[in-house]
Length: 258
Length: 258
DNA sequence: CCTACCGATCGGTAGG
DNA sequence: CCTACCGATCGGTAGG
Image (cartoon, rainbow over all chains, first blue to last red):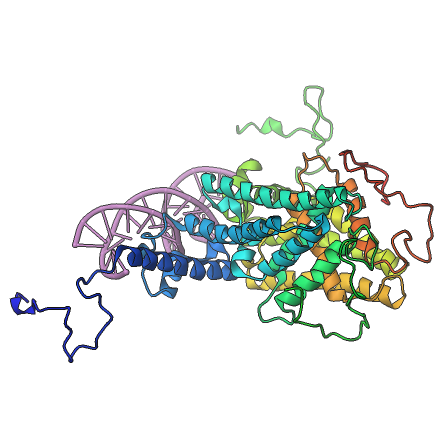
């Protein structure tokens, strides 16, 4: 201490140093890198938190547990989030963003109402098998601050509205037979959301297998052209469908429509 | 006070009394009545609790709130329950018993696998629109003591197994086309359980309308005989189905299959 | 069935 | 990013 001879030229590490990748002129990282490092830490908090929240439930998880899992202490979390409920909200938002980007992509493409609905069902089913996707249906929005709860409710309504739009559009373009879009959307979304509750990473069913199966099962009854056709516009070879000897428990797990 | 002349014959209320229905020989009610009174109070606690738990979520409801709503104080609740989590469990159990009695009744009757499945779907949909029924899917079993959580998980498995049995039975008796009973049960149960999340007493859809609609929608795709037949054994007049002009928002609310 | 109270938990903050 | 701590809530109990 008080030893001024420490003032050496750090841009020329000696052979005795373990040669860390230090920028030549400054011990501080450039602004961009620091921001990115911060964003990465923030996301690491979310990944740890969402896992714990799903495993144990939001109210049984303490911030100390979250911090422990990241090798820091509770107060450090407050560098990245205003409070526990904001962490919950950001986890939820990650899931919502995944769904939103799926919807954006589907809207950018073409196809009948039925085709769009099938794309949405397939992708949504897959998302329900991810942590952030499941958080979309397993977290209680009443745990959020009022402001964030409002944002979340609005996002939920947009997603629900998309299901209904695709169904109503399909009725218009005659790819889907007439029905009540609201109830049909409820029925489909219910089956899909339920995946977020029963899916287990260590279970028998792969996300792809679930998504493939549900895509057929949930939209087949709506298709205008009857059971064996997909849509008028895309006739296909004989449907590869579960040929159905109920004695065989095995299911295909790969090769879906991606 | 200290007035011994109060010792009058209470079996002969004077015209000055407001004539309460007091038993002739004793100010204490008979044992049976006291037990029943206790059971009624116990159930009143559950009705108040389930409402609050659904409205606000279990963790946001304090026992003081529950007690307040019943015009008593918190410690009084401990005359009827060992603790908060036991109240939650008993609410959940009420719902489970409702489902169990539905299943018992269906099993006592006859019919194809498809017919039984339809009865179950219809009744289950209706239950999801009740408080105790919704508690079955909206409460988190991790809030229960381990012993009660085990009981609840077992009950859930029994219900799930019943869905699968009816479907597998329907495949055997050829009322349902071959499919994977496990996934089919998940899809159906998901749609039904979701009702417990979106149904609102003050909404547009009556429980009967929902039950009728879901019964058709969720089982139609499974029926062996194609879209327009119910089962081989019970041919019917042309299906009264939503004739489906999507512009009409009104739905029938009465006259279902009970 | 009530008054009065304890005890533990836990989110959040002060101040480095 | 840490140590140390506060403050409020709330389930549960003692003792009538």
